[in-house]
Length: 323
Ligand code: AHR
Image 1 (cartoon, rainbow, N blue to C red):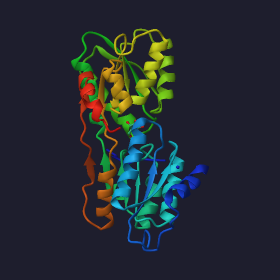
Image 2 (cartoon, helix red, strand yellow; image 1 turned 30 degrees about the horizontal axis):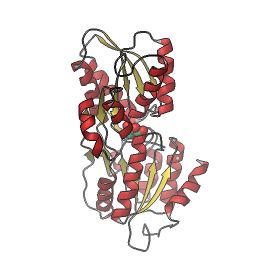
Image 3 (cartoon, rainbow, N blue to C red; image 1 turned 90 degrees about the vertical axis):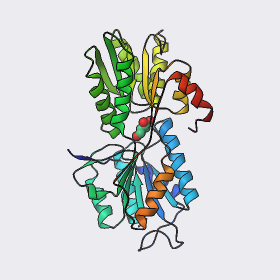
Image 4 (cartoon, rainbow, N blue to C red; image 1 turned 180 degrees about the horizontal axis):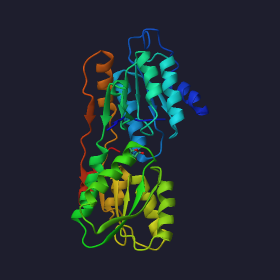
């Protein structure tokens, strides 16, 4: 089995890099002369509430840890992320962290980082590569397990035939591939549960709405929506309402993330179950970065702890929800 790693960076990128970098260019020995660690962070984009919370977490944690952060937004394009990583290599940052937009196509640029002796940390999403020496560690969720939790809830809460439509995340992205797999593995144990239509909504609210509108026109008897994130589920809710049906009742909805908007819809009974995916990775990322730069051993894989939510649990959790 190939190891998972990840992908992505445009014309706007250099402007973004300059605007967010604080302007430093680093030294030949890596980083800046002021003793601070310099981190180049190539983010996927701003496609979802989860991503916004993740970016905030990374930026706040860098500030608190005294890490000089050079941040770029790849607008969900692998080529933008690759350009950003190359730019960080040229700048001789101390460490590069990135959340790959897709799983494959990273070996060449990560080999460039390795040759330049700049350690790489994968955060949030994995890559698919035979060479695990291309990165120091991978910090993030177990997306297969998230899909399994979603499937298990459906198995435990269904009888007879169930027609599911699936709103997949970005094509080729680790969470889309793994959440699909985990879900299918579990529902496969119950022959009555069938995925009757599946398509990517690119992890966005607009994408979820558009795909759900098409599903409602082309597919009769939809019982359940399985959306790979809250945003697509929220888009589906809009489409279901516009079609004159009640989300959460006529069509049950399962999502992944548990951001505030999703949790509110769950508390309101428009979503039925949410599997948590924790975006607050900033502190752990800075801790790992400090260790990696100091040459200390770090685990190759750091898995995020996560839970699930029913409507009652969402009502209880909402007042203290941070994102
Ligand atoms: O990689 C994490 C996923 O990316 C989140 O579930 C989704 O909301 C985001 O866009």
